[in-house]
Amino acid sequence: MSEYFEIAVRWAFAMQMVFWGLNGFFHWINIPPASPVIDRFVTACMETKFIMPSVKLIEIVFGLFLIMNFAVPLSLAAFAPLLFVITGLHLFHNPKPWTVLILNTLPYCLLLTLHSGPLLRLVH
Image 1 (tube, rainbow, N blue to C red):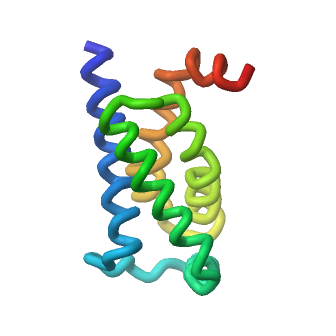
Image 2 (cartoon, one colour):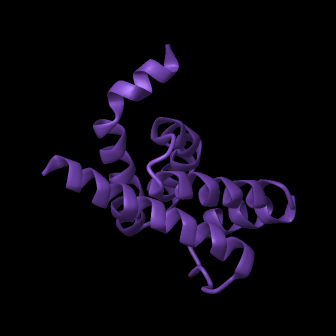
Image 3 (cartoon, rainbow, N blue to C red):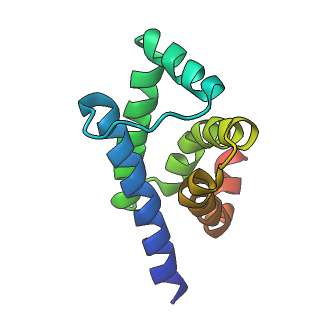
């Protein structure tokens, strides 16, 4: 049963990352405005023409790795800085951060918990 739970969480998180990564290049859905601080941060990242494309490429590549169940610990490690920034921005600058936290941070934390053994071996 826990194997199916892990697959469902991994796919739910990975599909989001791949979708939003591709959306960064193809602009299918406009991201709703957030707080002014978050909007300024995202705009600055897009204006560099390097940071946001790099983030979106990481979301796509490592999201696909998670879907294929390939290099899961490495993928989770690659997502760590992105989730840190996304979670921090929304916790401190979004008056209603719960949607982002439930849809992104919670599945990521669950996957970290389920894969904590391989991740600890990756660090050592």
